[in-house]
Image 1 (tube, rainbow, N blue to C red):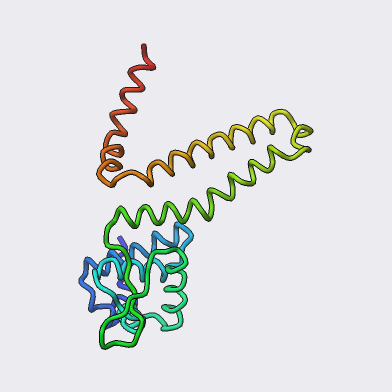
Image 2 (cartoon, helix red, strand yellow):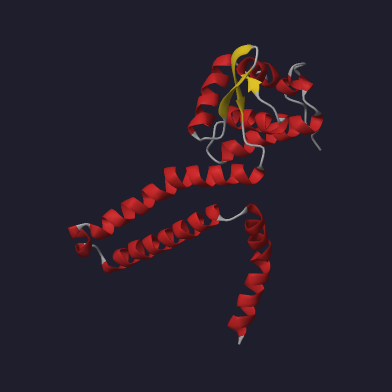
Length: 192
């Protein structure tokens, strides 16, 4: 059985300033970000700001994560474009400091809202344009059905998502916990 070796970044004294748990969280968040199509450093910076619970300046972020200052600058811009970090100023310090929301539900809403605006809404618009196109009636009937069904699903999901984003955090948590119970209830109803 192979023994996992720490990567060089884990051995760096600056990165070692993070606790083992924080280091693991930041590294994992970077890996998950990559899987979601987000640059690893962007995700790691967001995780660091979230865990730190305080504003940090770019030089400090670069030092802790052992990444180039230019990479930090580009990553912070990306996070600002996603509305996940904001600039704050501290008395006596002319540098820009960056912070993120510390409420997990606020972060969830921001990510969902931004992804919906960037990915989901444009797809709904294209599907609507396809259906409205005069040439749509000349498409294969099966393709027409599939496009209409996809549009109906996307519109329903969009409306549901908008409703979820307006709910209080406690209500959303209750709905999430009800998920299995609702499925069981619907399954019982379907068995009759």
